[in-house]
Image 1: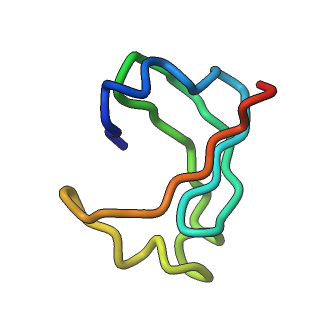
Image 2: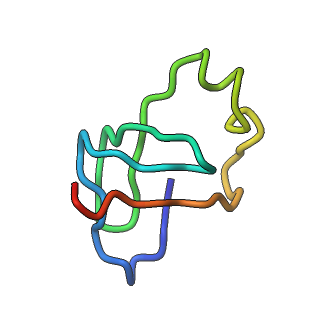
Length: 65
């Protein structure tokens, strides 16, 4: 996932992030992007199965991280 770089790096590896209301663990964190590992069950039972490259999503960051 990518986000506005003006927010600086507000993700933390092994920290939590919420994408479209789904709490996930950050695997890789960079200044304007992050990646998460998602298991097949999560894909199948959430709206993440409809997310494609370029799709806008709601992000909620763990500021305590």
